[in-house]
Image (cartoon, rainbow, N blue to C red; front, side):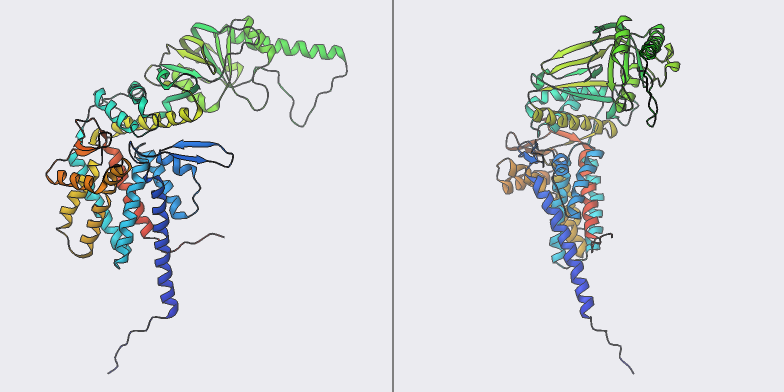
Length: 530
């Protein structure tokens, strides 16, 4: 009888196996190192990062998505962390630092489990099961919110702003964000918000306290005063044109040579008559404000045309960008006009007042009393320097996204690390019902979620181990709403302290972080295209 013998492992097979381990470990370590960059920026006491580009321009921010998008990351796994932060920004708009920190902690947990010779696929599957269970626990502790409850919406917005550079102005930015979203939303019907309907204009001068919400449109472009045209129009009839008020030109491969002065005078007279006919046709429709799209082929409007329009008492605003057309059309209820033949009264928009407003950094055009109130709004942000203006814009965007998250999913969770600690505690209990390697993986997953309250306390200068232990004991007693009040440095009821956040932020962060961890675990080689 022959005895089957196991074929000895060849050197080549051994080297291949070791290579896969090295590649996987390299991916995990490099991805985790990216999370370590932004970890110190988490929470109201988080630190800011100063980023300088190749041109010497400086950016200061503590927003996770902004920081990661501005730094150069070479390793593919590290770039996946940048994509993770961007995904959270798209899904929820807030929690971009949180999702990266959670993912980094899960990656460290995966490294520890790999050291115990647990297969990466087993780790990935167990983490996914733990995440599904964790989502159930989040749903159980979530509280419903009505979109007509402005107080709750404002608390959620101010919680988001508490970790920003402009947190001292949260009482200004928060109400602007809430009012802006609610003006373009039907609370009873809408399940999403298109933030493109909110136009943000930045202007130097004064402080953030001078920022305001405008029920209309603001333009960087100035009114053309070259020929003495009007600077204020009431009961405006507004035309939006995409053609040029200038004489036609020859084709690029042709040229016109005039050698006789009489013919030159005739050509100039013809050009003048051509422009007069166009301007009179515009005036005949009742139009008294003309918005002209920026042209790359030839001058959108000539000095002669401006002179004629000024004589006809028509206000002109030129160089309207292509990406502004949709917003303007929706706000003013007008239609873009592509040719002078199509310039008819039915395509005009209307507004109660069009005027120039002065600022210390120049003038803006403001259009108010628009017909389509409730479809679009504009926000004017003021600030003393460019860094502050940029950070205020990012902070306002995050606050807008927080309110949008509540429109999408009308549930709130306590902040201060309370959701992560509750899920961590409940998962530890659930892990006791499991066996073997799966139990070890779930326990590690639960332990990894404690990174949020740990980091919040660490960044606030508190004794992290004591804080996490005390918070764990509170949740063990059934106090689901207990979290870390970073500003007071104590464990307290987050609902009473008005530290709340949208359910979608925590839910999305947990889901995306788990998904990416599993994805990195399943990679055992890096190949490059030719």
